[in-house]
Length: 406
Image (cartoon, rainbow, N blue to C red; front, side, top):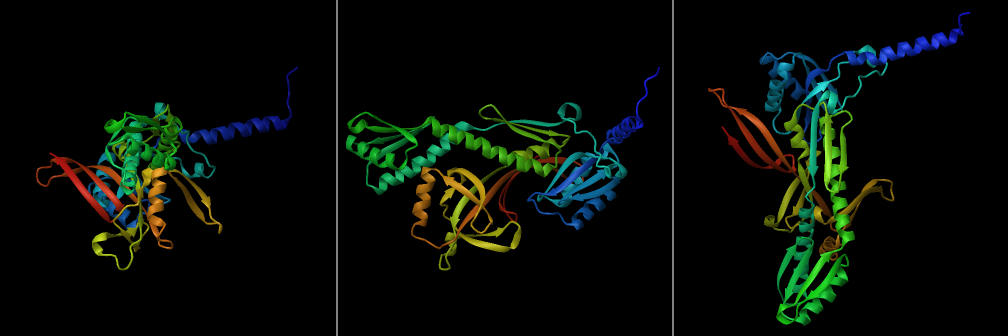
């Protein structure tokens, strides 16, 4: 006798097969070659700018399949793979250095499948290709930079206390200061160790050969290294969002390395430029009305060019003195950022602010980006490869250092 099952079981199998078929169909539609356009500063691009790009592509006989906008990023789909590189160069030429233009492969799932929230399977580097970066954080440089800042502050402290010293030496994770006498060395040790407990102190030599060796403790070294890695991870994840990559991977590998994988990204130059950008912070006081112009600088707000701030040229501390940072909310429920300063940064901040209660302070964001571009020479059709480093304090304040090779 044949086995027979209730009708609902046959219907359930049918529904599962139909659902599986629908949600697997997007994988049968090949991705469209496309260029992705976004503002280099995170602002939304004007539709008129994209129209100029479309007109320029049309003049060069490059067929555009569709133009889409999503959260300020524009996707221009092309008909042919062969036009992708030329379209990238044309868009970069029309929009200028303030826009990011990257090659990409755009999902070509039909609208009726998207209505069912169906999308193709996300493929990794092994199946789809893309960009793989292995970045290493220069831990030695991070420690040396921290010691240089500490050395400068200690020299200022010794001069203020009228303690004689000869020179300072930085080696690996230690800072050494030479003194003219044992008494000066011992006095300096008591004074410095009181304000900087994150060092291990050793007295060497006597008389005119007296020196004080300050070595970063293991706990402090680990804190500096972990903070450097975590800050780079956060920064890289934010930058990867500029490329609009589906399921990117940014993770720590070992004590000092970071792996970045961007599936589907074809433009390695744009990816390298975005991922490799560096930035820093400067803490400055707001200028008073009677401050001479030679001692001030004016900066416009990035997201609101109509606003500007007049700041002192003197820098209190830089972002290198920030040992950790976290986000939270103030007593009114508004978002705020809490920062902790290292010993040197805390001392410098205390000296700068203890007599100016009520005066505003600004945090200035400075970004350094390397740009690679292709420039055509009129007449001979020759192209020059140009490398440019742009230093941005605000979008319209640029220092340009360009080099071109024919």
